[in-house]
Image (cartoon, rainbow, N blue to C red; front, side, top):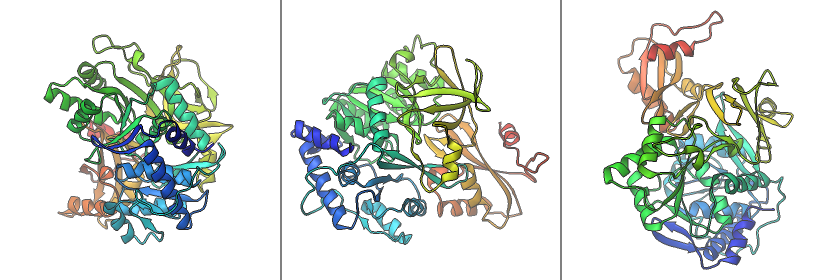
Length: 494
C-alpha cells in the first residue's frame, strides 16, 4: 500500500468535506487537496523525479507543505522533511546526504538554501503545479521507503532513520488504538514543525477525513492556538512541553478554559509536574503524553487521558511516560539481559513501527538494531503494571523546547575559535525551555569572546542549538583518561 492511497480514498468518499485551512480560512476540500497533490506529483515527474527517489521539504508550516508531502508519495517518491528552523547549511547537508533529487520550498527558505549551492532544483510553488495530474497514487509495498526522518546522533551529524509505508501505517493505526479516536469533524492544528511529530500525525487525520489547520503565523503562538480552537472546534495538536506551558499562560491571561480543544498530545522532552498540574487545572482532562523517537515514530509508550486523572487527583502513574503502544514489545535490559520490574536499564523495543535502519550508515544501524530490537539509548524502569519511567539518557542529548541539541555538534563550532582550548556543552534545567544550552570553556584572553562565538554559531547552526550562557574555567575537569567530566560540570553549574 501507498500512504497516499489514504488521501485518494478519502477524496473519493468525501470530496466536498473541508480539508485544508489557513487560520480560519478554508483553502481546499478533500477533492481539491487530492487534485493539487496529484498535479504536483505530475510536476515531480516532469522534473525527472522517479519513484523511489528522495525529495526534500524545507518550508514553514502551511497548506502547501501537506500538499507537497502527499504529492511525493502520490508519485511513489520518498519524503525527506527538513526542520524549517534549521540553518540553511544544515538543511543543505541533509538534502545532499539523503540524495534528494529536488527540494520543495517556500520563498523565505529557498533563497538562503540556494546560496549554499546545494546543487539540486528548488521548487517554490508546490501548491500550484500546472499540467496533467497523476490519476492514482503509484503502487508501493509496505516495505518500500516512505519517509527519511533525520534525527541527530551523538557524533553531531544527523542520521536518517528510514521509515517505510508499513511503519507509517502502523504508527497511524496505533494512534487510533491508544491515543485518540479521529472523526471527520475533528481538526488537527499544526503549531509544531511538520518535519517531526506534527507532520506524522497528519496521516491518521487524512485517513479519517478530518480537517487540517495551519496557523497564519506559521508557528506556535498560545493566543492564536486558543482563538483557532474556539473558532474551529474539536481541535487537537501535538505540542512540546514548553508549548503546553505557554498555552497555559495564555489561557490564564485570557481567563480561558480551552474551549474548542479536543486533545493536546505532548512529548519530545520532559514535562515538569508543576507545569502539567497547571495545564490540567486550566484545560481539564484533554492531555495525552507520548514517548517516541524518529526510529519508532511517535510510538513507544503512551500515557492516556485516564492515566492523567485530574488536576485535583492525578493518576498514580502521572510521573511515568505510560505503557507500551499496542503494536510494541518493550523491555528493559542490562548487558542484553532483561531486568526485573523496578530495575533501571536501557529501554529497548520491537514492532512494526521500528525503522528499517539508518540511511548510508550500516555501523550505526548495527549498534541500534540487534535481533530486531531497537536500542533507544534511554535509561528507564518498568513497574509491575507495565508503566515505564525514564530516569536518565545514556546519550548527552539536550532537549530544549522540544528540540534535540547534541553537544558535540555545538562543541565543534565553538572549538573553531582560535582562543578556545576546550569546550563542553551541557543542558541545564530551565522552567521555560525544559533545558537550556550552556557552554563551558577553557579559553585564552579575549574580551569579545562570547560575541565572537555567537557569530560563529549564527553562521553555522540553528538558533535553538546556540548556547544561551557561557562559563569560563581555567581548565575543564577530567577523569584519569583525560575525558571531560560533564557530571562535574553539571554539579558546578547547579
